[in-house]
Length: 369
Ligand SMILES: C[S@@+](CC[C@H](N)C(=O)[O-])C[C@H]1O[C@@H](n2cnc3c(N)ncnc32)[C@H](O)[C@@H]1O
Image (cartoon, rainbow, N blue to C red; front, side, top):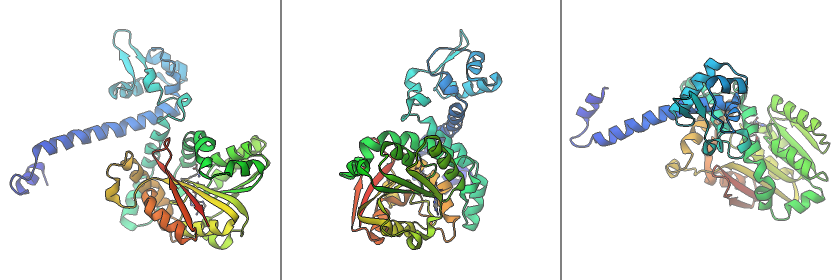
């Protein structure tokens, strides 16, 4: 249907040309923003933002030489950066400069505020778009193995979003926990990925013992090598499918269990949570960090990163769950109400929902049997 036909078929006076023009403009912005994300991801991965971090103006050749890259590609990338007003350009000198105010959100040294880390998800999701289109037709899922860099990006994301807040904000959500970790307790992290949070805790609390389980052999191999490299002998990792954790969790084996962003993309999240309940020793606590949203779509219209989270969900979290046998496909936007329901259903008598000021993306659930 053409725009003229839509206009003609709509009841008299109901088609607002001003609304249509505003939408057209907004969608053109969306196209530019999507494209800019891809170039920002390239700028991060190639080290170009870091090469421009000191704010010194440079020609494309100078910037390329500093980053050790090909000038022709760097020049085209600079074109995208200038057109999107990320980089300033001086036509007289032919130089380019990254303003300090922009570097503060784009360079590695700016972690935890480096937003370019998150831009990487856009390209990663794009790499499975054709598989996702097929899934829309047949209802299946895209397995983890189809994603080239997911664990790498996720570890980088966790390294700057979880680690800096872990000791100061996240662990204190459980009163006395830090004292207990210092004295020595047994800790388990499920869906641990590359084990970023766990290895940091193992280094901080040598009297405690730490275990991490994940389905991904690749992520566990990385985590194990990293623990060895750091000489952490109080930390072990295992490749495990947590889809049957309700049956194979060792009873009362842990004092503190965590999941960081690792419930909603499980194939069988309910079994994992029931297993967590079973694995907790008396006095034990389960701390779950997971995406903050409402389980009711209409309540997420004003969510500051709603479009991003629903997209990541559809093209990763939901689909990797559906790809597992009997996968529930909760999706990243399963929401607080559904989370409380699942934790309560698993036997947790107390489920406390916390939000932290530093983190617009997550909720922190403190669950006690
Ligand atoms: C979003 S990632 C979070 C990784 C890590 N906790 C972090 O915050 O960096 C979710 C993790 O759950 C794992 N996972 C998904 N399904 C699983 C299953 N059935 N059994 C074990 N782990 C699973 C994935 O391999 C992935 O590492």
